[in-house]
Image (cartoon, rainbow, N blue to C red; front, side, top):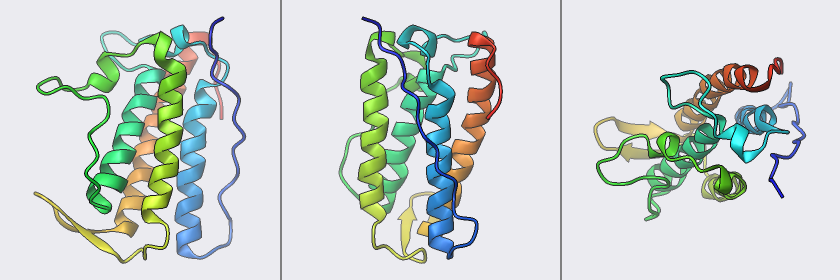
Length: 172
């Protein structure tokens, strides 16, 4: 039986709220939007690279964003000693270049598990809480939320184009 990415319900961000709820709401919307762009596709379709010579695929985006979530929220902000996801020493872009359609469900599960762990990593932290990043200096959790919202928004634009090339689906 071939695995197919499930439908996902997206919940609008709050239209009136405090800053934290607004940032969390926008990030959750962007997270869900990525999975929404993948819904109904098989692992084989998700692994397609329809814009040659680019290695971009929807599955690669899922893997990349799981890695980015872990890197920023857990490793950098919280300082957890967790290994990077989807990396091999000396090989850049493994999240994109080594997609495997038979692992699509596991990659989706990995992303959603990372979301849960990242939510826990920032639970109770103030937006003004800071962390130090080598080469960049001091950063706040507020900055990190904005960075992640931008990261997802940019890649969700890529996902729009990839999805249209795969099956013609366009839109929200």
